[in-house]
Length: 499
Image 1: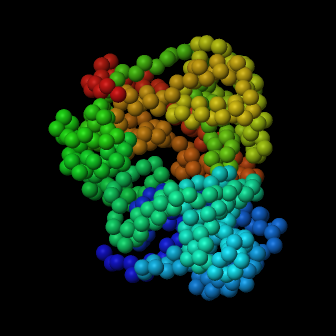
Image 2: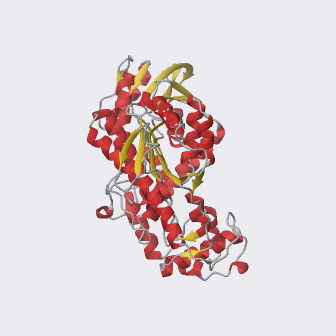
Image 3: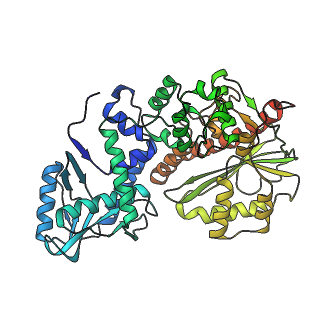
């Protein structure tokens, strides 16, 4: 493996590392022909950030560094700083040490009063972000800028800031813990760039890397325990140290003979062992016979939300057991010949969320107080019902509705082990055991967010239809999972684990 002679450390590495450390490793040492596409949502967020930035700075008075070449742009920026320019836009700052060039391009460099090498002033970095609050990779970026500025001006700016999506200035005080975490992360990233391949590990965030398929392939070729679902990274390391490195090792491990494994109780290790056996023989492992309610009215519920815009833009419900359509009088409705129908509430614009919520509350007034079950997958629906109630107010009907919630995600976890690497509703429903198909090849939560942000820009109703189709497929998949349990659960479970 060739070594990297010249290293340039830029803030984008923080995002890549937090998404998947192997993203960086493969960028430097991987086969470029095996690199996939950067997720559309990531590209969209970059574009969105640029537009937000342009919108904010158009009302500012600043001196812009337009030079593209980094070295030339750095010299221009340094000259502007030495002249004491009040506000520098898109300046380049950098310094070199131990063969590494630390380089950044803060959106703004703001002149403030405090003596430095330049005179009776110094500069503070400010970044313009399209998020509401500051995220870890963002403050790490600001800490890096502060460190570079310390080298250039002899003053470490301890209070930095972002301009959020609402054009609010959010100050951030850099404490010693922030420096320590940032410098530790920089060290980890530099190790990767120098050729130290991170230990194999698969998490849901890895799916956002263009190298995700290669990461899975690497783990599969090594038959590595990184393929085991819900194995804490600290437990993963401890198991490797104990000699449990492959799926075969895990399938045959003698749990009572292992040293204490952190973040993995004996019952967790029993499950991991079954998971490994399941991956080997491609068979289900039933642990518990689930008891699911069978009410006359069944509602399958799924929400689409955008965490960056902080909006829940689509609430969808697949309804069975109401052939007369008594509960299809509020909201948008799609009816089907089998007596089932899909009700949804949509915020076509960001300001419509409260209107959507009120219509949803009106719809709840139509529903019965009993003989009803509301199935969903994972806790997102519960969380958002509570959050929007806090924001816009609730009702007795809402509280009754939520009392009928049944989360199928813990039912899956407690009942059956699938030979899968992940247990999202899509991973399970698309598996050979359920064979459910979404209409859109790229269907997924991130794709829905991408579509929604496209819709906000273009107002193309075809895009809006794609979003609604995707949500409808999600709630249909939830029903499909419920019926799969009803028709496939064995009378007795052969494996007993006290989870």
